[in-house]
Image (cartoon, rainbow, N blue to C red):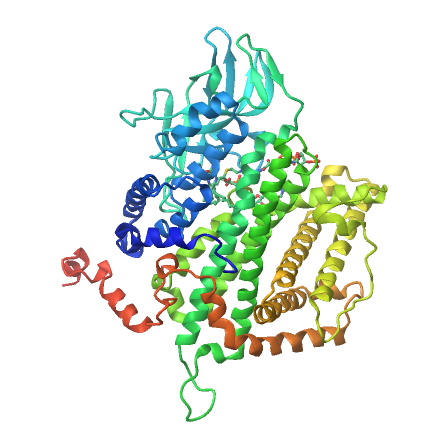
Amino acid sequence: MLFKGGGLPHESLALQEKLFGAGPDYNFMTRIERFKNSLVRVQHFIRCCARYNLHDHADKKWFEGVAFPNEVSVLGPHSGMFIPTLKEQGSEEQIQKWVPQAEKHQIMGTYIQTELGHGTFVRGLETTATYDPKTEEFILNSPTLTSIKWWPGGLGRTCNFGIVMALLYIDGKNYGMHPFVVQLRSLKTHEPLPGLTMGDIGPKFGFDTVDNGYLQFNHFGIPRENMLMKYCQVLKNGTYTKQTRNPKFSYGAMIFVRSMVVYEVAGQGLAKACTIAIRYSAIRRQSELKKSRPEPQILDYQTQQYKLFPLLALAYAVWFTGVRMKEIYFMVNNEIKQGHTERLPELHAISSGLKAFTTSMASWGIERCRLACGGHGYSAASGLPKIYVNATGGCTYEGENTVMLLQCARFLMNIYGGVKNGRRPSGSVNYLGERISSRCTLTSEFTLKSLADAFKHRAARMIKEASERLNRLQASGNDPEDSWNLNSVVLTKAAEAHCHYYMVLVFESVVESVEDNCVKDILRQLCQLLALCGIQENSGDFIQDGFLNNDQLELVKQKQLSLLSEIRPNAVLLVDAFEFHDVQLGSILGRFDGNVYENLFKWAKKTPLNKPEDLIHRLLR
Ligand SMILES: CCCCCCCCCCCCCCCCCCCCC/C=C/C(=O)SCCNC(=O)CCNC(=O)[C@H](O)C(C)(C)COP(=O)(O)OP(=O)(O)OC[C@H]1O[C@@H](n2cnc3c(N)ncnc32)[C@H](O)[C@@H]1OP(=O)(O)O
Ligand SMILES: Cc1cc2nc3c(=O)[nH]c(=O)nc-3n(C[C@H](O)[C@H](O)[C@H](O)COP(=O)(O)OP(=O)(O)OC[C@H]3O[C@@H](n4cnc5c(N)ncnc54)[C@H](O)[C@@H]3O)c2cc1C
């Protein structure tokens, strides 16, 4: 039970539901059918929550994994953003008013921030909420074309409520971005309310099951009580008050989702892709290894192992890192609730950095899994295209990945600057206060400590160099903003090195905590492989300052190759250990029973293009 915790009972319950276990095949549906099918599942899911008394978020997640395999439903923005924002930013009164209705799905909401003209630059958003003390209303307005809200999930057709991020104006003064609860559609007719122009933004790369939408406000009034007022209040007469607070508290919903995405999107997506590719590679036989001998399983080719086992190691690493990221989120969030906000910048930096680092790695890894499955990997029957389009969205939403790495780098630069001025760093950056050895301790034993130390050295050096380069750019006459931009490639690489070290460190700590010696040995091999591949793929970073020499790099390569053979006997078991049900994988190649060919043939026969009454048939006759 390394992975599941308490999940299994809820998965089994969900699998008993006919509608979830064996519905129509997603691959044969049009976009509209996919969307409708997802809505039917949403309604059934809501009924199941009542029937099985599922109230706890974590319990619901296990159920959702079966009900909505490899796709986001409209429940994603509702339970992942709308409800958390109400809870985190609402006053007690507001929480009492909206949260129970939202949790019972009597109202469905989304998070409405991005606009046609701006997603990344939140301070550039243009939607206004102007307070009118006479009517005691905020008047929401979209003053320009670029201010039309664009992208929010569930906005197009489904949601009747939303939290709208808008610039608060009182008496002509701009108080910055604030969250407002807005009813969007009639609870009786489901029609958009007068003053709102809204709809779906059209087909996308993936996310067919979600109606990402647009919304234009035409001087639309909402009651004063609808501004979320935990941290800031607008009194009836228009007086603005605020608690002493960090203005970035209003960005809290983004930190929450970024923290969850590491496990929910990157970790799950890559683990599923590895399960499919490794199981299939044990079924598929091709070519000859030895003359006149049976064709080998393709998993016996070293090149196939070299493609897949580093990804398997990465899947374990991202999974463990995702679990740790969730723990950190809840820990720091509790501190913040008690008024201790000291660790908010670190939480912002590590969640931004890890969200970017892991979704990029997972997206790249899922595509490599597809390539490793040859022709059948290109078929929708592999399940890999759906997993890919879902996971790769994570590189963009909740903060585009480059932008998120730069946020992480900004924190690292602040910390490094502080260290230079005698401050002691703590938490995930405490190593920046250590004296980092310039001598590499790697030997052919490749202890996990020595491997983690190598990543520590790399991260510390790259952060130091990024900081020094920034200073040099300024010293040579560039202003701070231009210096930042001229240094931004170096900064993103420093942030990646920091996240990479963090991931290796988390994996190492998990291995050390395992008591079963057999499991520990196998996990140690995976952790070594993860680290050695990281060193080889980024070897320039490790040799640039003479930390690693050519002889050591040769040792790295040798060990990497020997690990492939050592991991081979356990490879299928290692993906089985993720315990994905076939319904969750949605893949014929990755079926647990290995019955791939017979089912591929059955599946192809069902494809709509084979229907005799099809127009194509008539055209071709
Ligand atoms: C263990 C138990 C388990 C429990 C179960 C859990 C249940 C989980 C349930 C649900 C989970 C759901 C997860 C699954 C996800 C799948 C669903 C996905 C659906 C997709 C939904 C997508 C939604 C969206 O995309 S919403 C829109 C998101 N938009 C963005 O992210 C915009 C990105 N831009 C920004 O964030 C900012 O504008 C930024 C940061 C780029 C710049 O901001 P700025 O105001 O211009 O700031 P800047 O000047 O750069 O910096 C000033 C200062 O502020 C600091 N800062 C910035 N941001 C933050 C922050 N968020 N928090 C704290 N501090 C911040 C910054 O670092 C600077 O600091 P200093 O250097 O000290 O000045
Ligand atoms: C599937 C999906 C679901 C979404 N769901 C929601 C939702 O529910 N609610 C919501 O409000 N929004 C949602 N969004 C919007 C999403 O949050 C934004 O698209 C995202 O934050 C990126 O912003 P952008 O589109 O403005 O990208 P841009 O900022 O235009 O990015 C384009 C390029 O510019 C670069 N760039 C931009 N700024 C900088 C900078 N400062 N430094 C260096 N490079 C920079 C980026 O790196 C990128 O390469 C969703 C998006 C997607 C794809």
